[in-house]
Length: 344
Image (tube, rainbow, N blue to C red; front, top):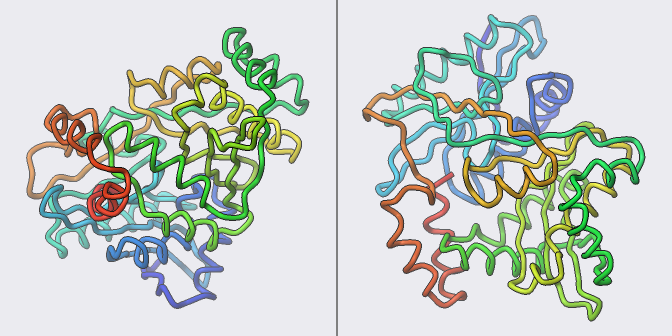
């Protein structure tokens, strides 16, 4: 069995990669080959998309990218800007060879640490980050059954949104989404990803990436979500809300509309995505009747003694968050991509 790297310009190789990913039970949307181009072109990070093959057959994949920053350190990650990552392989041998190559590459690049964003634990002896959980739930075959499966108090919020005359629309661009997203993260004191990143997601993934926007009866955008589709799953991944969205229950209505549409498309899994334990988004997803499932982010530490904590929960960023909220939104949107590209 051999280990090679996917050439970013090899379209036939990318097609073989994606055929394997679509068939491999361990693979996720974030294992798709197109992430290599997005990370290289939008964020300018070096990528190393490793694959194992034998007798002309692909046996496993491991997408990696290096994020090297004076502020946040030098890391090799599977995969930046993704909630799931690590190895997806057809055999234990392929998985082991890919991980060995990743460790060799990490040493060669001189990174501070190597990070695998695993759904399932793989290395009991590696340092593990237990800050994040994910929420996944079955989509029932009938729309009304999904409504009734929502706990009573949360169901009342969805019905409030319906009563308020809200409407959902599928947008063909990221304009309305980005305006809501950027304003939302600014209010929370964190930098926004660049608009061109979301435009690239829509362009590159085509029908597997979609923006749903909720509007008030007067047509004003209140809430929006960018979702990914993979096999029989929908993954609402980035979202933003107007300050007035809460009064209309627009956020609640948004996720119901996404679930309703997914049900009508015959999808089977609603992946509510990653949240930090003890946060508002964590509580919101619990209110929908979703159960938290731990994520196993595993690390090999080379030039550091502990796992990095580059997230808003870290108290050392408290002053930065407070200052960022005071920046004019336009300035924050210009500066934000320079910072967030190094967080991954």
